[in-house]
Image 1 (cartoon, rainbow, N blue to C red):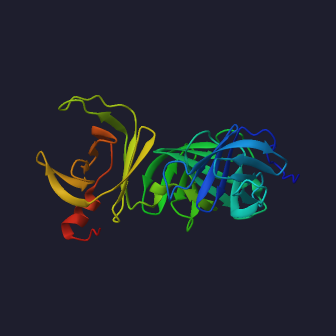
Image 2 (cartoon, one colour; image 1 turned 120 degrees about the vertical axis):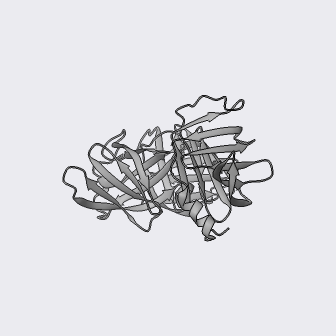
Image 3 (cartoon, rainbow, N blue to C red; image 1 turned 135 degrees about the vertical axis):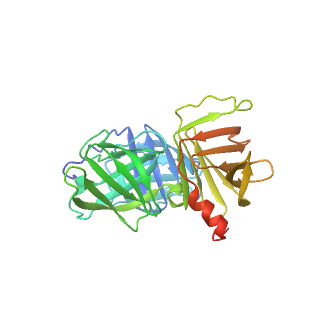
Length: 312
């Protein structure tokens, strides 16, 4: 067995995150789930672990068997016909043997110097709340952040000590700013992003939500929400811990009870209204009438629609 200084024990791991180009595996006890976010929001495949040795976890589904490495320079193997004929299927990017349980949105990173294994880690995004993990140094959460802003390239996160800029793609590096002295510090290279919504052109986050039962008869909850869409007719709504994906047919400026709104039409019976700071979701799959409040300005999209620069 290969030993790496500072690495947690390879045996009897309850949770793990193993990433490859375009997807990742999550381990919870003996159960494993595979995700490929760009292709499908829901799990791609589910597995049960049937054995392990010093180098691999062995998992099986109805379709195939898979060998998951315990160190990142080993490859992921698949036995497609379950006859012992193993073949390489993916190059492993990251192996983190302690990770949050359940589904999440991951941004994995590595220090620029490959010798410093202790700086491997990842960020987990849950709407406006972020957590950082460095499993080789600590089994629990390394740091917690609140998202305070975002643009097309970066999420801006803040803790009591630091401001961190997390890029939405692997083209840019994480940048850290110390609040006390305002100095920029060296960043980390993003290895993989497993968050489909990070590449949406427009994303609106809301602090509270409510399901309307009658005319203006609702009570707001602390459940946050997000609406993201692009100019290629893709839209995603994140609400109540679930993600809903649709294809929309039209985006236009419309009047809603005397207020200017952006109307996103999914079909004749399902649509979403965006106002400055609020939104109204009229969709059977999500709920016939959902109100979202505490969001940002839609002025940019309003202006683009008015001057005709928005393209579908």
